[in-house]
Structure formats: C-alpha cells, structure tokens
Length: 105
Image (cartoon, rainbow, N blue to C red; front, side, top):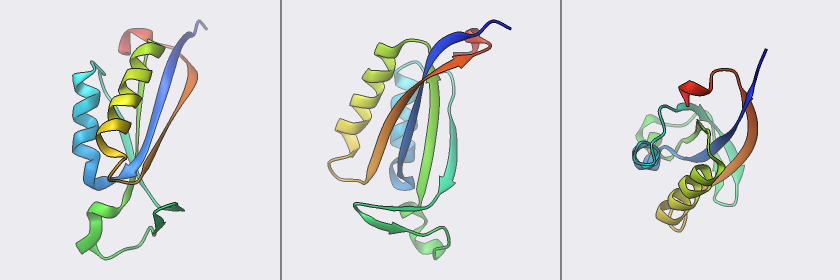
C-alpha cells in the first residue's frame, strides 16, 4: 500500500461562521470537506451538546479538510483565523497525514 503526505486542517468554531469557513475552503481550491457537530468548553465558555434550537448557530462544529500542499493549508488557516477569530470563538490545528488516494485532494 502506497501512501502520500498531505495536511489535515481541523477548524473548530461556532456554526454561525460555518458558511464563511466553507466559502474560504472552496476559494482556496479545496475539493471537499467534512463537518461534525460537537460540544465543549473553552475560553468563550461552555457549548453544551444539548441546547435549545433557538441558539443552534452557537453550536460547535468541527470542519476538516485535507490538502496536498502544506503552504496552501497554512494560507487557509491564516485566512480563516484573520476573518473570523477576532469576533468568534474557534481554533485551527493542522496535522500531517498519509492519504491513499492523493488525486482526491
């Protein structure tokens, strides 16, 4: 089995900015992404898993995208952090990963 190096970008932020985050990913050339609803506690307080639907935009989502080029990953991360994290809670981290089908990224 042959693997190829790529970078996984994980963005954990409020659902309120999810559309903007995914727009940034598309504009950077990402071919796809996955997102997962979540919960947690951080500097901006508790984000419970069970909340009234009226505040659904404040739920936490984790968006993940894999890109082949680390420089592209860093550009994406910087753009999203600059555009959103001064006003909204969130974190971004990157990991080097091995992928089986590099043509998908």
